[in-house]
Image (cartoon, rainbow, N blue to C red; front, side, top):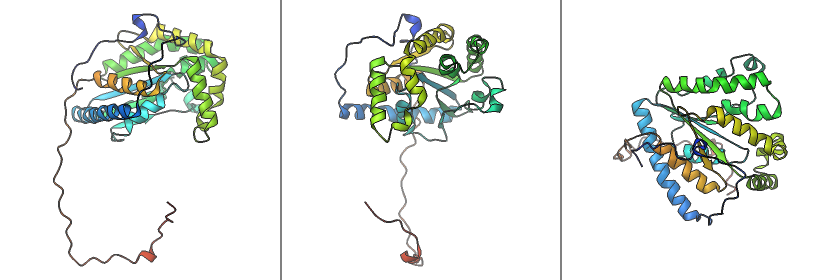
Length: 284
């Protein structure tokens, strides 16, 4: 897995790409195969992590897309095997009154990676060209200024040495509705279904137009978008992680197994009585 960094393969700049496509469904990916491949990729992610730490790289990965497109799922699979001190998630909420008066990119810039870090942006400064644009949370002038300034901002980040990788998770309308319904039916997942998500169903075409215009301005040679076909969650996770690994040349710096010493028993230690400690009840 370590090695070649390949050219832009699935970005929209190479042709027309529509989220409301009617693609031929692929056979369901077997759980055993998915878990086997995910394990392989997570081992490679650990190698990448050690390389980033050793070389002092600064890596920022943006995950964008429609609600319920699967961004959170792939972020979870990336981070669950990694050191949170090296790979961290940034998911900013609604800006405060003070932040609203700042330069738009200011609150995001504060979360950019330092040397030896990889930051995963679960949504990013592209909120302005998505939900803010569609829902009217920004003015036309603010929106136009974003489209003008964003490519310059990203070029500045890249010139400073930050490795910036942008993923757009593309899901069709029927699959998005199915996932919304699944969230609504599951009390564990219902918190994910926000009023904005409900509104996005009726505003599908508005979000489509906003995404198309955003790509027109920000899908550049310096900072391209990489589109992930996210109609199948499991395949999307594997494909995205595989692509991420291909974007940075790295070598295996995984620490060698250490020889664990035997526990020394002096015979002079007495454990306090168990009834002096507050053990939780063992219900399971």
